[in-house]
Every structure is written in structure tokens, then in C-alpha cells.
Length: 236
Image 1 (tube, rainbow, N blue to C red):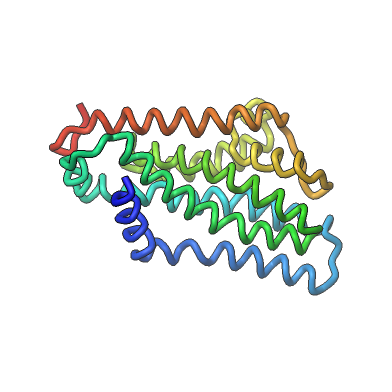
Image 2 (image 1 turned 30 degrees about the vertical axis):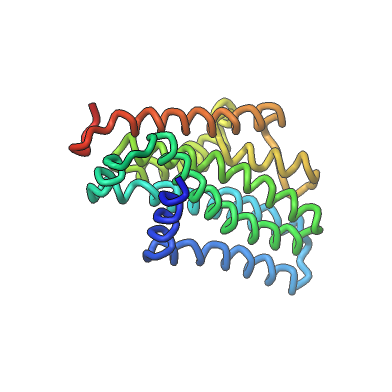
């Protein structure tokens, strides 16, 4: 399992894909720093920068890049077959790749969100955002890892979920928020450190339970899906 994790990390950070993880965190911190430098009231820019860019773009997009990257490329180029010939349980393969994806996403998103929260309010607010980002990293990467196994266009479907389901429907249709990871992240951060910057639209119980369901459900489904792959690289 550790070998699979090391190979996954090397493949993830040794490609151009890793460079795609840098612009959004730099942009988030840069915008927050500029607003703070000009002494703008946090209520004037906090929601747009922290929620609009950090929670709605930075976190899900990086999770999409990483979550689909740790396994999707191996499905596309056929190298998944070589992994499946090894004496490894399908569960161990998925869990190793999932662990790498979560760690990469959490580090890349929690740190810039902490800095943005610190600049907007306090270390407590930054810590709440960072912890919520970690929870979101678990949920998002589980979903996007699963998509890389069930479709040949995981990035496209992931963008549909981020832009249409969360970005459009999640803001205007209240019923869709129950299945919005972005809303879970906002609610958890707001519960840990209440602030006018965040506008929680689901309950904390819903956020906690649904986050867990995303993590467990998508991971179990991914394990079962990988188990259906034959050595010819096709599903049975």
C-alpha cells in the first residue's frame, strides 16, 4: 500500500499537473493581502474572496485536478492493468491513492484559506477555514476519484458538478444544497468561527453527516468499481 502511495505521489507531483495547483492559492492569498493592505473592511471583500474564490473555486478545482489525476491517467493510458496484476487488494490501491489525493488537496487548499482568513479576521477564523477545507478535501476527492473510474470524462463531469450543481443550482435552488460539498465547508467553518463573512445555508448536522456519506459512499463505490476491472482494462 505504501509503495502504491509513493508511486502515486511521484506521478502526481512529477507532471505538469502539479504546476496547475499553484496559481489559485497564490491568487487567493494575493487578493486577500491587497485588500488588507488597502485597509478595506473585511465585510466588503471577505465573501467574494474567501467564499467566492476560496470555497467555490480553489477547493473544488484543486480537488478535481488531484482526485481525477491520481487514477484517471492510469485508466486512460492502460497502466492500470499493470497495477491490477500485482498481489494487492483493490481496497489497498484505492485507499493509497485516495490518501495521497486528500493530503495533496488539503495542504494546497487549507494553507491559503488559513492565510486569507487570518488577513480577513483572525487566526481563529483562518483555522476554522483550514479545518473545513480538510473536511471538504476528503469529500471532494472521494467524489472525483470515483468519477475517474466510472466515466472517461471525469473532469467534464466534475466541472458540471462544481459550476452547475454547486455554482448555479446550489445558490438559487435550496433543495440542491443538501448535496453541495461547498455548502458543507461553509457551514463547518461558520459553526467553528461564526462570522458575517460566511452565509451557512445548511445545518451543521446535515453538513457533517453528508460529508461522511460522500467520503464513505464514494470510496466504497470506487473500491467495488475497481474490482470490476478485468486484466484487459475493461469492466465486467
